[in-house]
Each structure stands twice: as structure tokens, then as C-alpha cells.
Image 1: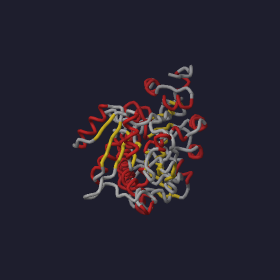
Image 2: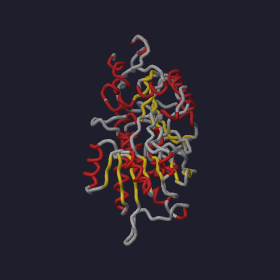
Image 3: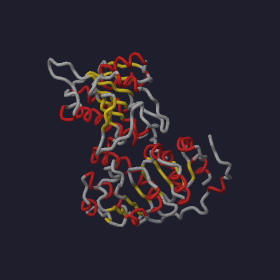
Image 4: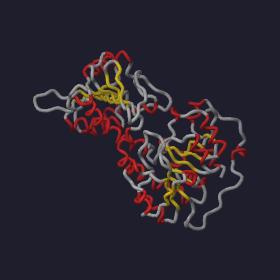
Length: 400
């Protein structure tokens, strides 16, 4: 592990936060309007905001923040939120909650020593972001790093469920004649061969994609190097589906026949793993569709590149590629409810704790999600990606 030779005294705060004697107006929670063109979700739905305002917290929401998820400013003001046009006021809150990764501009709007809850997406960041965190002594808690008591990533899992289901629906539309696809109906009808769907990865994305494809009547093949995951997906789906390890020749033959490929294999952040090469894609059917769900972590296709919701596809070697990094944002209302449900307890515990350190000590999920503690990098994968030193959050918190 790469650690700078810093004495522990140098990273301890000068004083602990004072214990809060009551919950009234204890902290402010700010929810800014997302500026990323691919991001349509909002962190808290009105029902969740009502919970926090009932506890006496101030929830400050930038005007229009919920518009893309079909929540109006009035929906929020009716449950006690403050609506403002002043973006600086929102980012001046004690806890800032946003969905898209932070930008340097976002961090510069925040007050020194405050808390940011958002995604981080290391592969989309530059090293300068770490310097800004350090300068402002901001604590960053990333959705993708949060683990629950069962050692699962609840936010990743929830968004993967949506992405898996959505990938099949997106592929169905891209196969249509009006989308310049093959003109095939995803699934099949009596007397006509079913659509061939190849799914790379037997995790949450693969499971949900397979379930949806089977429901439509498609013929599916699932590939993964984990026998456990392959056995698990067969048991969960309750059907004797075709499964295989990632044996090159077997995969090549499956891709030649495929109408749709769902690339949903888990990729370690910043370490893309090319499984589908350019040569394999050249041998696929013209008009076939590939949905690269793993594109946000580098992807598993040699031909992949990120696209946007406005221009989601490109064609290479006659194969239609879909590379939008956050598919769940296409279904912003459902995704917002899912995120809000997961955030309620975590945010409430963070907001009611006598200090940040107490919250991190008591709540494993908050602790594992913390990639930056008051400007100190505490996440190994980020440190390795940028080749910088980091500290173990457990060692830091143990000093309190």
C-alpha cells in the first residue's frame, strides 16, 4: 500500500465537532441542479425530503433540480424544502448531495471542511480534483464505494438492476427498422427463430438482462469466468439456460450468431479488461447491437467509447454500439426513487451524529464509502489509479 510518511498528528482535526444538543436545524442539506448532460436523476425524492424537514433539518434545493426526473419545485417546497436560484447557497450547505461526479467548480463553491455525497467515477477525473479536495478539506463519500453489512455494494447493485433491464429494452429499439437496425423483434413469435442474445457477465446486470430477454422470448447465452456466478444465475432464473466460461473459441462462435450483445461484466475501476476484440466484432452480423454497460469503468470492448443520451450510438464494422455510461439516468424517476430509498438511513445517520468521526466509526457503509476524509485520500483504488499516497480510513478514525 502506498502511504506517505506522515505522522498521524498531522492529519487529525484541530478540534472535534461540538456535540449537538438537539436536532432542530442541526445541519443543512443542499441538492444542486445537475449540470452533466447525461445526468437526469436527483438524490432525494419529495417524500424523503419531507422526512428530513420533519426532523428539523434545512433542505436547500436549486430551482429545477428535480425537473428531469419529473419532480417540480412545488413538489419540494410543499414538503418544506427551500428552493433557490442561488447555486452558491446550495453548495454552501453542511452536506451537499448530488449524483454526477464532482467537478472542480463544484468543490470551489463548497465551504471548507464540509461533506459531499455523490458518485466519483475515477476514470472520468483528473489528478487536479484531488488537490482541490485537499485545499478545501472536503470529505467525499462515493456511492460506488459504499458497502452494506453483507459486503455488497447497494448503490451499484440497484443501478445495475435498472441497467440490466433497460439494456434489453434499448437493444430492442435499436434492432428496429426505424432505428436503422436489422428490423428484428427482440424475442420471437411463433414460427420465427428467436433473437440470439449473448450476455457477458453473470452478475446483477447479466441476471436482470437475462431475465428480461427470456421474458420476451429471446434465446440467451451467458458467459462469465466465475462458475459460482454461472451456477447462481441458472438457479435464480429457474431455467436450464446456456452458460459458458469465457473460452475464446466458444465466445467467438456465439458472437458470430448474436443479434444482441450485453457487455455487463464487472470491471475493476480504472482497469479495463478487453474481452471482445475488434477482430471478433468484425465477424459479427451487420446491424447487430452491442450495449456496453461497463463503459463507465473502461468497458470490455476494444471498439468501445463513451456516448451520450443525446447521441447514444455509433456504428463500427457494421455493428451498432451503445456506450452511454449511466443507463439508469435514462429512467430518471425510477432511479431517483431507488437512490433516495438507499440514502435515507445513511444520510439521516450522518446528519444526526454528534460528529463526522462518530458517524464513520458507527456506520460501516459510510466508512467504506469515504474516499476522501477532510482532504486526505483514503481510497486505495483512487490512489493506485493516480499513483498518489493514501491513508487507511480505519486508522484515521481509530485515533478518535
